[in-house]
Amino acid sequence: MENLPEKTSFLKKPFVIAIISIIVLLAIGMYFQSTYTGFSIFPTKTKVIYIKPANCPEEICNTDSLRTWVRDVDVGLEIYSSNSILVSSAIVFKENNAIVINTANKRAFSNDLCVLLNLNNACKIFESSIQRTDVVTLNFFTSLFSANDIKLKQIAINMRQILNESVSVIPRFIIVSNLDDEAAVNIAEVQEVARQLCMLQTQPNNWVQYVTCVDNALLSNQWNQETWQACAQAANVDVNAVNSCMQERDEQLLRNEQNTVRQLRLTSTPVLFINNDAYTSQFTFDAVKKTVCLYFNKKPEGC
Image (tube, rainbow, N blue to C red):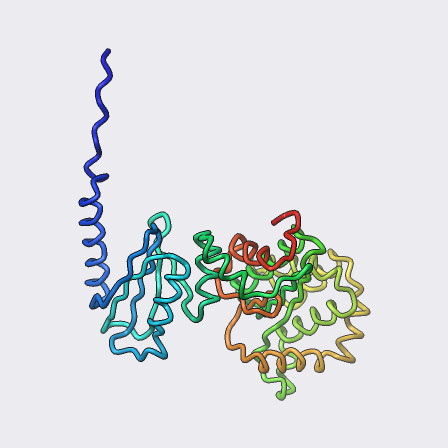
């Protein structure tokens, strides 16, 4: 049988692609009640769509800086002004999914484009802005009962298990209770934070198994004030050492945590610092791992 010539797809014609792109952008503009204010075109498949409030001051919306950043990273940029939003946002599309990109500063912007889209120029810019070390330190601040915070703890713990001695993991806690109120110190959540702080002081090697047990109970809504005892037994925790620490140092340890949070001006959780740099991209294992691996002088096995 004679082979038929392959038909050229109508959607592959350049002018058709251009028309479809224009229609999509107009739809976005109509959705946000936006006005198209300008664009920069670069030879790249990646394009950042930036939507800002109408009449937004330059020092807040930062469009001039953003134009410079996209040139450095070599991505396209389209800017819209909207009367229906109060906060600016930048998005890119990956596999037909819209991804929000951090535009707080150039390092955050390049970090997102590096870890989320794997853009080489963005990775190079991000690496030039960080201090690389042989051992990378992860400081993470979490509250006790938040599912998102538990997720970050699990990411950090898994990172330690994969990269071993190449990473140092330091758990920290954000305590919302007023410690000047004597009753607050006896709240179950505060007591559990004090217990984990004492465990980290007296027997840090047992903390991972213990906190994994506690977090699993929290995620399954099975946690109660007695859960810690079963988890301590499962993790071979020296309960007497923990209780002694709590009797002598619980308030001091709790206040140290609150003072650190105030000094860093942290107002939400979870928060992750990598070698003292605030992590600004998505809290997924792959995104965090890729960022962590950029901080090594020599990438260890596992990166």
